[in-house]
Image 1: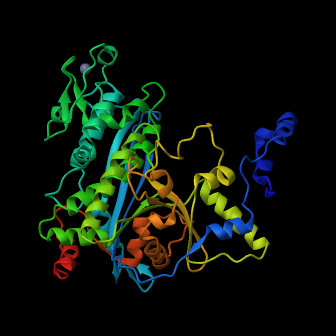
Image 2 (image 1 turned 135 degrees about the horizontal axis):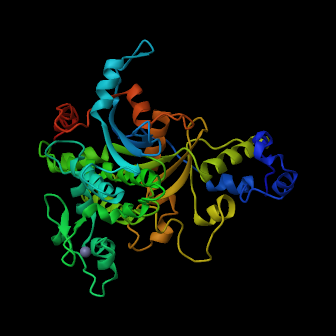
Length: 470
Ligand SMILES: [Zn+2]
């Protein structure tokens, strides 16, 4: 049933539309999707849960942000971009001591955030490193070295390049990495790279045809966003998204190599952490293909947990904006007008059928699943104990190539830790509409464990699992 919303009266203040012809043509627009399902259908789709005490003891979060700044007052168009990542691992059983009597201790705040921030700078427009002559050259080098230098969890652990290399299959690599030299790409005997061709110390190899460097990070295809003529602003959000999705994988891989804990305790630790990412579990645009190796890796971890009788990962993205969030707001308004109560502690999986009926149009009449090229999780709406909505993407319960994928992802029963996820959402009680970064929000509430490699406070974390040694 269509829901009649008002058009934004912000339009009335725009000076562009004084022109009567434009005013006339504006009246011809409609919002494509502003539908809500009949209330019976919606209430039927919502499944209520009895909430048990959760076995989640820690929360790992990561969030990235970026900005562009001019580097010289005389050349305001000469720009450099920065991308910064905040990560946090908090202990749900310990309150933060950062806030005392309602005031944040600035020393503790800085101590926590300096220790967990990773950043990278990139040339955006009319700039390059001193040794390079193009934006492209500097961009490729900077990304490769950021991946090489960035690691989470511990000094002895692997870097982000090793993580990327580790999750790629031979086929993922050979299909998606090429020499960027146009002469090599057009050549008939285009060289097919193998994992073995990349040196393990820097993940670089030399193209046998032109003898130029090929970086492992070229697989992210971020070079395609470099625009020497108009500027490469688009690269920042793409890089930020893909790194946000890879940092938790780096954390997991390094935790699994922490020999201070028995192997069983490392797995127990993993199933006690909730991984909460910003936005949907999806990678868009040029680096999108990385979504598959990430899903495959996380499904392999779930298999290992299952073999040791441990529950699977709690792994989800929290969406604060977007079409589903707007749909839920409309739905709630609609139900309130009908004096209809929303079931609390409940979940609805957004099936493709529901999505294409009420949230967004199906662009192509093909039969494939939504997010086939981008998503590695399923969108869901959760109503917490107060009936407040949360839109999450929960990790798919199986690999895309596993039997029954296209049915199981829409069945709430496939998500074995959903009741604990609701319980966690009740506990965290984060404000969906706040702009604050989740890692920072959590640091105000819970004791943070440093993720800086080499800092010994992670021992606290490992220690809590020595104590549970059986
Ligand atoms: Zn080449």
